[in-house]
Image (cartoon, rainbow, N blue to C red; front, side):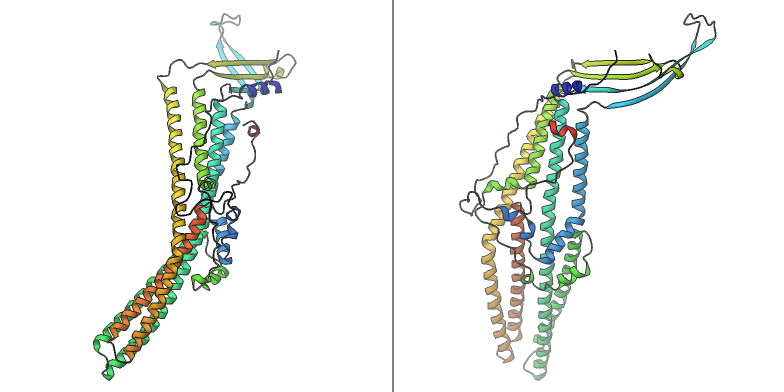
Length: 488
């Protein structure tokens, strides 16, 4: 009788492996309010399709080019992708343990023996025992009766999905970071242009003050104040020149490569934040539970599922293990007769292992698995709470930045009028130069404040889009299925 592995045997083993000891999974309740603060009641079934495609939100052509380049070249994204590939390979490794590994073998064994020890008739001289064998078989295949391997496989799959979702979360972060970096560059470029205008104005004013001092209508104090204001503008010009260059360095780091001459030229044409194509409004009345669609939240939940699967694997360790080692082939003491008729040989070595005493190791491993599940529950709940706070902060910004922008514009208008009046009174000889200098500094600060407020408002819109999961369509790129995927 020869041993053979039939398809029926494999099917029976898989059917026996169909049970697991994984606890039933229940998603933890979100520990957040049901509505956003200061957002009113949520609109049931609010439109969220506009959040899926990042191109419908980031409509500026230069920004789209930068984002596309970053998605192809950003090193953080590449690291995340390699991590996903490693997790996918680990899943395949765990799956492979559900099937017996068939190996081909060939071997020879030659031993020199003493004939007297074995009471053989050859006399006292040595003789040689030879054995040759060729065959195939399986080694230490574990029949997964209690679902230990299957639980480990499911845990590995859930960790793969968690890493894949983590990559998608990284993708959203890169998109938002590139957008914010471009806005920072444009804002610094705009501040640089304003500072150049102020510098040119102060040069003219300095010359004017020198003339008034020469004709006796001004004082040397006015000249000193005008020169100090001029030098201050020269210093500030260097500050914004440096910040603009650093913003470009940050942008190129995020993009993953130096900008092409065409892209750089198009970017440098943006002398003001007004030159950036505006972002569309994010829909209002979105329910708070929609943050559950964010990839980082889904990734945290998959990590929780994996910890739940680990409990099933830890439980299965308490039950007997059945391992099978078997081989089939031919064997002979003469290599020339190895493949002749009647040389067939086989062996089967089933083994059952029952845990009797382990000084509490298995119990400790089960307790450890349960504790890690509780840890992942807390991580998931914290991820939900953090996401809720991020959205709430961004919504608060949306409600206040528009009013702040209007107030800042009114301040610039009032400061401009104040400066014009102060300059006219100085030229008419009614006021000292100090009044003009104060008005000029007030106007300059108001202009820079308007730029900063507009930058904050636009960046807050980007943050709101990102924190709501904008740019994520809730689908993962399919991976090549392993054979056992169909059984999970």
